[in-house]
Image 1 (cartoon, helix red, strand yellow):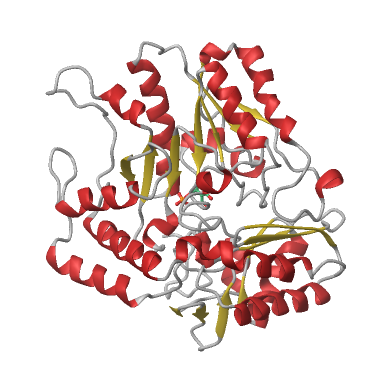
Image 2 (cartoon, rainbow, N blue to C red):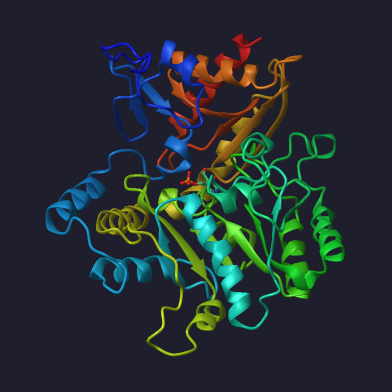
Length: 442
Ligand SMILES: Cc1ncc(COP(=O)(O)O)c(C=O)c1O
């Protein structure tokens, strides 16, 4: 017998919630029962504006009819198909559909089921690529402080959010990190990319000198580090990182699990910044969050490095039972159709100036030490309470829920990234609620 009561209640439920304060939540739950368009609804029918697209994934808004219908039809027609040595037509169609949107020659696609899996897949592709070309000595992987790359072992190791790493032992060996780019002294209240900090990319040169560049396989960064607190890259920073990678034969991986699918006003963040990585990890918005899916995009020369040797050999001994799952492909194809019909992959660029104005209008409210924005993302950084970091952010989150908005916080940083269908009146509503929250959060 365990010590759960015989009659399960929410408070003693078996559900071990991910990334949650289980005991606190179960005493005072915040439940969502339904969703439509820009809104969530609680079981009592209270309406909440969705300020963070679920978990940065519902870019076209909730329960979109086309996507719902496509998934319903697919589940009745082909519920599952093995992807190892077998295939189903939608997988090929969907890969070609999204490859057409990808930047440069990143036109080859490996399917996964999540951002974490995309990250680990990209890291493994990088290692295997070097080995395939006779540079198997490139075994090191470089991440960045405050980076978030999901929760699998590779992603946790290259990730740089201390709280997500420290209890999991030594993780993966051969990993190091460059410095993060957050500098409030120089860049507070920046609009778009901050002016100062391109030289922080040179930290990669330090690691090249320390480990010898010939041992480094890849560097992985989020173009905008979102989960770690919305850290927008300084002007020139990503370009410099690209140049250093080129100089030393190191692959550059962009983790675009959040920045892909229109968040910055282009299909991919790489297109917004004009910097071409070697691999891109995506997930989330690829199916509008409806069915779990991820995809890794790679440049042609990476794909071709695997297409050597005998044709009766498996080129990449990697993949998931649910890689290119039929429901995910159906959801993804319908999602791309909605994105295209409604111009959602570029809509953030149109809304950006208005969004930026409304976000920065919160300057001067209690405890606000920074506001930053890019595309349809904004962060409001609050001063931490003495001796209780994160508590002010948590209060803001729960107060927003009471006042009619769902928002995410990373510690004391409020992160906003609504569905790309948001209208200006809804932007006003969202910031009005956040204003009310900030006024009453001590
Ligand atoms: C940049 C980035 N990489 C990876 C992940 C992990 O994705 P998932 O939770 O789908 O595994 C996330 C999730 O927020 C993310 O923001």
